[in-house]
Length: 125
Image (cartoon, rainbow, N blue to C red; front, side, top):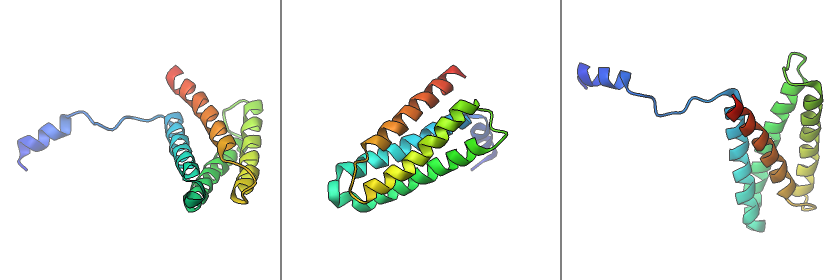
């Protein structure tokens, strides 16, 4: 590659979008929610994928709970408490799903509600 081509590449626009922290959170929820839906649609044949998606979802919620538990978290106290409660609920409901006692629908609904809130925050910024 010659110097002229390298110079052109250096000044071209970057194709990757710049993400805010909320945008990154939105994308994380979107990915895991798609995985939950896809695995659930497979029925019993998708149990391994469902277990993996639930594990990833629980990791995401655990990180979120740890974040809102920090004293210096900027969210309002009431919202932090509700997010922490949802993290606890998600963990409990995940166990029910893995035992075959419930469906993934509630987790998808919760994640979708969080995504709507994040999308509104991202659009308002």
